[in-house]
Structure formats: C-alpha cells, structure tokens
Length: 196
Image 1: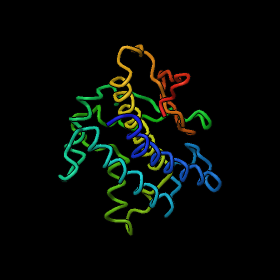
Image 2: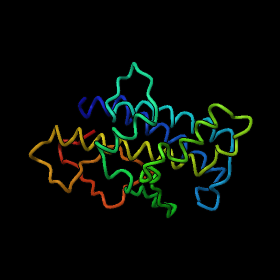
Image 3: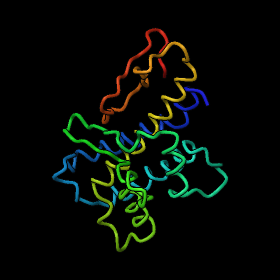
Image 4: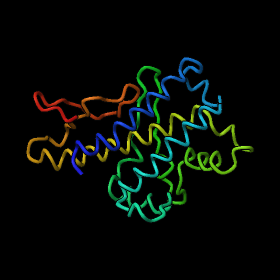
C-alpha cells in the first residue's frame, strides 16, 4: 500500500471520526474531570472508532482480512512490529491531556486495553453497560486509532522515501489531526511534495 491509498482508505476516515468527536465538545468539555460522563452518542462513536480499529489492527498485524481477528491475535503481531507503541504518549495539547492508549499491553497477562474491553461491553451488553460509553473510553480509543495509523504511515513513508528521510523525522500528513500529537515525534512537511 502506498501513502495515497492509505490516505484515501484509512486516514480520511480517521479524520471523519475525529471531526465527529470534536463536535461533542460543544456539549461535554474535553477534560479529565469529565472522563466518567457517558452518553448514547459516545456509545455510537466508540463503536465506530473501535470498528475501524479492528480493520486497522488487521492491517497492522498483517492478519488476513477474510479471517476473524481478535485482540488476542493482534497484540503479539503489533507489539513485534511496533514495539514502542505501549510507551507512546498521545497528547491533546488544547486540553492538556496525555493518553497512553496501549499502556495496558505492557502487562503480558492483559490482551485488551481497558477501553477495548469496555467497547465490547457496549457492543454486546449495552443495556447494562452504557456507563462504559464515556469520554475517557471515547478519547482513549480514538487516540489508539490515531497512534496506530501514525505507525503505519511512518512505515509507508520510510519505504517510499527511503534514503531521503532521517531516522528522527517523520513526514506527517498534509491534513494532520486537529486533536492529537505524539510526544517526542517530529513532524515535517516536504516542500513541493506533500505526503498527502
């Protein structure tokens, strides 16, 4: 897959999901003080984000799209490919938040991040688990999707720009996230040849 295919098939969809989430800020301020606030809108958005994450997990772990995947299968493949993903911090600069969406994977006995477990509760037991459709799970799952897509994008760009990229520079998307950045990652635009 090249950068344009990735942008059209995955990154543009991510930006749509991010935009939908940002609209909820009109009614529920993005703040760790509101992390337990839940709603049917968050339930809808968490299901959309985690449904997309399931697709991106398959892409990142190179699991056949025609097979049934599971987080238990994705975790070892993703950690082997992107071993620093558990320590990466996704920053929400406008709201002074820091999220480590895959931090739970540092524990070898835990296959699913808490937000993924809660997504499954929402999906399968909504009548008993609507409280799991909260701001914390919403922003954590979206941060997880963002981070995983950035890893895939770096990998694609390294292949396409081999020999022209320093190991410390990532040529970021032309239309970046309006919500997140990754701590200690440097983003640069190629002049005259934007990545997207």
